[in-house]
Amino acid sequence: MEKAIYPGSFDPITKGHLDIITRTSAVVDHLIVAILENPRKQTLFTLEERIEMLRLSTAPYPNVEIDYFGGLLINYVEEKNINIIIKGLRAISDFEFEFQMALVNRKLNPKVETLFMVTNSKYSYLSSSIVKEIAGFKGEIKELVPPAVYDLITQKFRHP
Ligand code: PNS
Image (tube, rainbow, N blue to C red; front, side, top):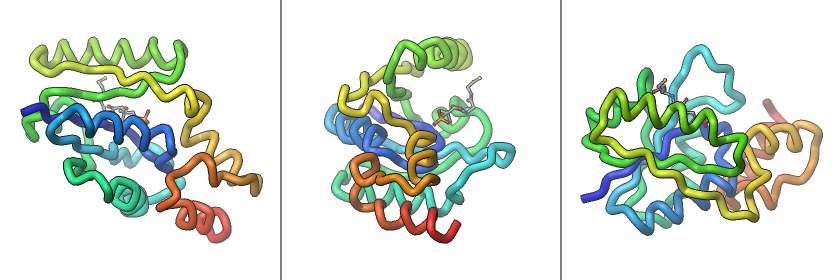
Protein backbone atom coordinates (compact mmCIF):
# COMPACT_ATOMS: atom_id res chain seq x y z
CA MET A 1 0.00 0.00 0.00
CA GLU A 2 1.52 3.31 -1.09
CA LYS A 3 0.58 6.02 1.36
CA ALA A 4 1.77 9.50 0.44
CA ILE A 5 1.74 12.95 1.98
CA TYR A 6 1.66 16.28 0.17
CA PRO A 7 2.61 18.85 2.82
CA GLY A 8 2.38 22.61 2.54
CA SER A 9 0.97 25.88 3.82
CA PHE A 10 -1.87 26.09 1.26
CA ASP A 11 -2.49 29.78 2.05
CA PRO A 12 -4.58 29.48 -0.13
CA ILE A 13 -4.72 26.34 -2.30
CA THR A 14 -4.07 27.13 -5.99
CA LYS A 15 -4.86 25.29 -9.21
CA GLY A 16 -1.18 24.29 -9.23
CA HIS A 17 -1.59 22.50 -5.87
CA LEU A 18 -4.81 20.86 -7.04
CA ASP A 19 -3.07 19.60 -10.18
CA ILE A 20 -0.35 17.93 -8.06
CA ILE A 21 -3.03 16.44 -5.76
CA THR A 22 -5.06 15.08 -8.70
CA ARG A 23 -2.08 13.49 -10.41
CA THR A 24 -0.67 12.04 -7.17
CA SER A 25 -4.02 10.59 -6.12
CA ALA A 26 -4.04 8.67 -9.42
CA VAL A 27 -0.75 6.88 -8.67
CA VAL A 28 -0.89 6.15 -4.91
CA ASP A 29 -3.41 4.25 -2.79
CA HIS A 30 -3.92 6.98 -0.24
CA LEU A 31 -2.86 10.63 -0.17
CA ILE A 32 -2.87 12.85 2.90
CA VAL A 33 -2.73 16.55 2.08
CA ALA A 34 -1.39 18.05 5.29
CA ILE A 35 -1.15 21.67 6.33
CA LEU A 36 1.81 22.71 8.45
CA GLU A 37 0.43 24.50 11.49
CA ASN A 38 3.17 26.97 12.34
CA PRO A 39 2.17 29.54 14.99
CA ARG A 40 5.27 31.61 14.08
CA LYS A 41 4.25 31.97 10.43
CA GLN A 42 1.69 34.67 9.64
CA THR A 43 -0.97 33.36 7.26
CA LEU A 44 -3.84 35.14 5.56
CA PHE A 45 -6.26 32.23 6.00
CA THR A 46 -6.77 30.50 9.36
CA LEU A 47 -5.99 26.80 9.71
CA GLU A 48 -9.74 26.04 9.70
CA GLU A 49 -10.26 28.05 6.48
CA ARG A 50 -7.35 26.30 4.78
CA ILE A 51 -8.69 22.89 5.83
CA GLU A 52 -12.14 23.81 4.50
CA MET A 53 -10.71 25.00 1.15
CA LEU A 54 -8.70 21.78 0.76
CA ARG A 55 -11.78 19.68 1.67
CA LEU A 56 -13.98 21.46 -0.89
CA SER A 57 -11.34 21.28 -3.64
CA THR A 58 -10.52 17.59 -3.14
CA ALA A 59 -14.09 16.35 -2.58
CA PRO A 60 -14.09 14.42 -5.91
CA TYR A 61 -11.09 12.29 -4.86
CA PRO A 62 -12.09 9.50 -2.43
CA ASN A 63 -8.49 8.48 -1.62
CA VAL A 64 -7.48 12.00 -0.53
CA GLU A 65 -7.61 12.92 3.16
CA ILE A 66 -7.02 16.38 4.64
CA ASP A 67 -5.12 16.85 7.89
CA TYR A 68 -2.65 19.19 9.62
CA PHE A 69 0.50 18.75 11.64
CA GLY A 70 2.92 20.73 13.79
CA GLY A 71 6.66 20.32 14.21
CA LEU A 72 8.73 18.03 12.04
CA LEU A 73 7.16 16.53 8.95
CA ILE A 74 9.04 13.25 9.43
CA ASN A 75 7.50 12.73 12.90
CA TYR A 76 4.00 13.03 11.42
CA VAL A 77 5.01 10.74 8.54
CA GLU A 78 6.17 8.05 10.99
CA GLU A 79 3.07 8.40 13.17
CA LYS A 80 0.80 7.87 10.14
CA ASN A 81 2.87 5.10 8.51
CA ILE A 82 3.40 7.14 5.37
CA ASN A 83 6.12 5.96 2.98
CA ILE A 84 6.22 8.74 0.34
CA ILE A 85 6.57 12.52 0.62
CA ILE A 86 5.38 14.36 -2.49
CA LYS A 87 6.78 17.77 -3.41
CA GLY A 88 5.83 19.86 -6.41
CA LEU A 89 8.60 21.38 -8.54
CA ARG A 90 7.85 24.44 -10.63
CA ALA A 91 11.29 25.70 -11.54
CA ILE A 92 14.98 25.34 -10.76
CA SER A 93 14.49 27.98 -8.07
CA ASP A 94 12.35 25.49 -6.09
CA PHE A 95 14.95 22.79 -6.43
CA GLU A 96 17.75 23.87 -4.11
CA PHE A 97 15.60 24.14 -0.97
CA GLU A 98 13.52 21.08 -1.79
CA PHE A 99 16.69 19.06 -2.46
CA GLN A 100 18.04 20.05 0.97
CA MET A 101 14.75 19.18 2.71
CA ALA A 102 14.60 15.82 0.93
CA LEU A 103 18.14 15.01 2.09
CA VAL A 104 17.40 16.11 5.67
CA ASN A 105 14.23 14.03 5.75
CA ARG A 106 16.12 11.02 4.37
CA LYS A 107 18.78 11.47 7.03
CA LEU A 108 16.04 11.49 9.67
CA ASN A 109 14.30 8.43 8.21
CA PRO A 110 15.93 6.57 5.27
CA LYS A 111 12.81 4.42 4.73
CA VAL A 112 10.74 7.39 3.57
CA GLU A 113 11.21 8.53 -0.04
CA THR A 114 10.65 12.08 -1.29
CA LEU A 115 9.25 12.07 -4.83
CA PHE A 116 9.07 15.21 -6.95
CA MET A 117 6.05 15.80 -9.12
CA VAL A 118 6.83 18.24 -11.93
CA THR A 119 4.22 20.92 -12.29
CA ASN A 120 1.87 21.17 -15.20
CA SER A 121 3.48 23.88 -17.36
CA LYS A 122 0.13 25.75 -17.31
CA TYR A 123 0.75 26.50 -13.62
CA SER A 124 4.52 26.90 -13.44
CA TYR A 125 4.20 30.63 -12.64
CA LEU A 126 1.59 30.11 -9.95
CA SER A 127 1.99 30.31 -6.17
CA SER A 128 -0.16 31.19 -3.16
CA SER A 129 1.80 34.46 -2.85
CA ILE A 130 0.97 35.41 -6.46
CA VAL A 131 -2.73 34.73 -5.79
CA LYS A 132 -2.63 36.94 -2.67
CA GLU A 133 -0.75 39.68 -4.52
CA ILE A 134 -3.25 39.77 -7.41
CA ALA A 135 -6.36 39.45 -5.24
CA GLY A 136 -5.00 42.08 -2.81
CA PHE A 137 -5.00 44.61 -5.65
CA LYS A 138 -8.49 43.52 -6.81
CA GLY A 139 -7.17 41.58 -9.79
CA GLU A 140 -9.05 38.58 -11.20
CA ILE A 141 -7.98 35.19 -9.75
CA LYS A 142 -10.67 33.00 -11.33
CA GLU A 143 -8.15 31.13 -13.49
CA LEU A 144 -5.73 30.64 -10.58
CA VAL A 145 -7.71 28.90 -7.84
CA PRO A 146 -10.01 25.84 -7.77
CA PRO A 147 -13.60 26.82 -8.73
CA ALA A 148 -14.92 25.27 -5.49
CA VAL A 149 -13.08 27.86 -3.38
CA TYR A 150 -13.09 30.94 -5.65
CA ASP A 151 -15.96 32.64 -3.77
CA LEU A 152 -14.43 31.87 -0.38
CA ILE A 153 -11.11 33.39 -1.41
CA THR A 154 -12.52 36.52 -3.02
CA GLN A 155 -14.77 37.10 0.05
CA LYS A 156 -11.68 37.08 2.25
CA PHE A 157 -10.25 39.98 0.29
CA ARG A 158 -13.49 41.92 0.57
CA HIS A 159 -13.79 41.23 4.34
CA PRO A 160 -10.30 40.36 5.60
O1 PNS B 1 3.85 25.39 1.18
P1 PNS B 1 5.20 25.53 1.85
O2 PNS B 1 5.16 26.65 2.88
O3 PNS B 1 6.30 25.71 0.86
O4 PNS B 1 5.47 24.15 2.64
C1 PNS B 1 6.67 23.92 3.34
C2 PNS B 1 6.59 22.65 4.21
C3 PNS B 1 5.41 22.72 5.17
C4 PNS B 1 6.41 21.44 3.33
C5 PNS B 1 7.95 22.54 4.99
O5 PNS B 1 8.23 23.77 5.59
C6 PNS B 1 7.96 21.47 6.09
O6 PNS B 1 7.97 20.29 5.82
N1 PNS B 1 7.99 21.92 7.37
C7 PNS B 1 7.95 21.07 8.54
C8 PNS B 1 9.26 21.14 9.34
C9 PNS B 1 10.23 20.12 8.79
O7 PNS B 1 10.01 18.93 8.92
N2 PNS B 1 11.29 20.59 8.12
C10 PNS B 1 12.20 19.72 7.37
C11 PNS B 1 13.42 19.37 8.14
S1 PNS B 1 14.51 20.74 8.28
